[in-house]
Every structure is written in structure tokens, then in C-alpha cells.
Image (cartoon, rainbow, N blue to C red; front, side, top):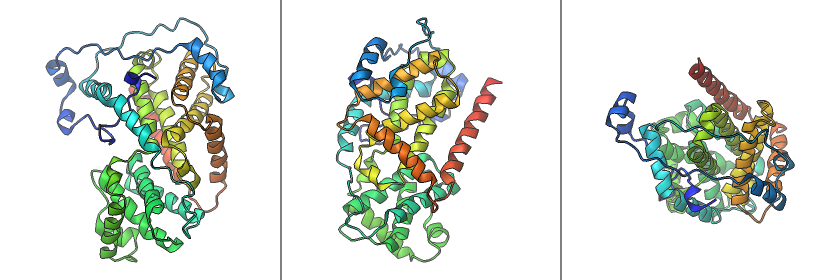
Length: 377
């Protein structure tokens, strides 16, 4: 992918961008129409050479379900999009100006945070860590927090485990997990977890408030406050889908694919959450893992919605192959594809995790379905 077409949803410091400010939210549709000056057409469309991609799919090790698709017809002339609203215009402008540089930064940084053999020098069992991740998911579900907080809390937890000079034991995981959630909620949520609630309800008064505050300080200082510029697998997934929406808006409009693409994205996030439960995935780059989640999510959604061999199926399969070919790793994509598939089975056979991951995914799908039905009535 050329530099102009790599547009992650991050700002220059590696943080997620929020181009729609509170002031912007106050604009009504009428205000937008009256006050926004004429906008120049942004033509940053990804030009996909389907024939070239089909050739390259034999060079790169891509799962067979993506390698042999053919288009139904060649009349895929996409219609012109309508004028963009203010928030979309600002988002695309930021992505156009900063996206390529930040994506390059993100790819460089992911090599620095790999944690091979995360638990080897500790007396923490993999099962205890998995149970903690599952508990974090449950707590954030109760608070109705977004995906970002969960991914951030796991990032902080694993970064601390990888960098501390202490030898951690199973008994240390409760306080550590609590405080990681506490920090993550401050970073990503408008209404973070309060100290009193953390002490009374989450910690069940087992950890004094002073101990909680000291642990928070210790974690932030150990990580040198770099948690503020972290990049997670979720950030990578969001980046790829933001890039797709910006450069393929005509396709989305022609096929009314907003619902499908959101379902596709949420399914990829589901798999990204699932693999967080297993410490071995810390040894793999975040973008690499995100591409594996996207591959498996595409396979699941296309089969679920029975779009095989449709125009939409062909177009999206080419996009998936395109981003795989543009993000090369020494490890094959077949490896991450198989690893995620295998660990999905392992996860569902664990007897010490809850079903919150499935509950949250089904809830998100139901919300998406209601939104789609409402918008089509």
C-alpha cells in the first residue's frame, strides 16, 4: 500500500484520534449544510489490480479460501458518493494528513513491545492469567465500557509482568488486575472507576486504598507512562477498517455495506479479545495478529451471511488479500490463521472461564441488527 493509503485512526503521538470534538457534536445536520464551505473532492481511492493480486496470492502464503475466488461479473462501476458531513470530512482530512506517518510509527513500535515467554521467570500460571483476563472482561461489561478499556488494561497488565524485576506469584494477580483496570478506565472512559468502588466492590476491601494508589504509581513509573501512547491489536483493526472506509466509500454506498462492514469489524474484535486470554500471543506483532483476526472474521461473516461468490464477496476478498500482501512478516499468515483457529477451540473447552465473551459479542450483534433494521424501515 502506498504511503497515502495507510491511514490508521491514530494521532501523531500514537494515540487514538477523536476528531469529532464536543463542539462539533453540537452541530445539527441543518447547521452543517448552512455553515460548511464547499469541500474539495478527496480522491484517495485504493486502486486494486485484481489480476496482479491473484498472481501475488500464489506468492504469499494465504489461506485457500481467499486464494481462489473469481468475480461474478466485471461491471462493478461504483457510483459517486454524496457530500460528506462535517465529522466525516474532518476525520478523513486528519487521516490523509497524518495517517501514513502514524501507521509507519505503529509498525515500528510493535516490534519493541513483543513479550516472548511472558510468564517464564514468574510463578504465575497461564491459567491464573487467563482467569484474570476473563474477569476484566466481566467487570468492563458490567460498567458497559468500550473495547478500548479492555484492550488497554490487558496491555498494561502484560507490560508490567514483562518489565517488573519482581517475581510475581498467583496471589499478586488480583491487585495487579484491579489497578490495571483502574488505570485503563482513566485513560479511555469519560467516567472512570472510582477509588471507593474499586476498594469496596471490586477488591472486596481486601486491599487498602493506600496500597491501591501505590501500585498505580509503581505501574505507571515502571512503564515510564508509555501506556499513554500504546498500540493494541484493537488499534490495528480499527486502522485497517478506517482505511477501507475512507478509500472504498463508493463500494460501501453502492452495496449498502455499512451493516456488513460493521459486523465484519466487530467479529474481528471478538477474535482479538479471545486471543488476549492466551499469553503466547504476546510474542507476535499486533498488526500481524489483527490481520489474522480479520482473515478469520471474514471467513465467518461471509459464511454466516451466505455472500459467497457475490460481487461483495469478491471485492472484500481482494481487499483482505491486498492488506495481507502489503504487510509482510517473516511468519506466514497461515501460521496465525491456524493458531487463532486452534485457540478458539481451546478457549471454548476451558472450564474456568465465563461466557461473557460470547454474551458481549451477541449483544453487540443484536444492537447492530436493531440499528440496521431501524435505518432501513
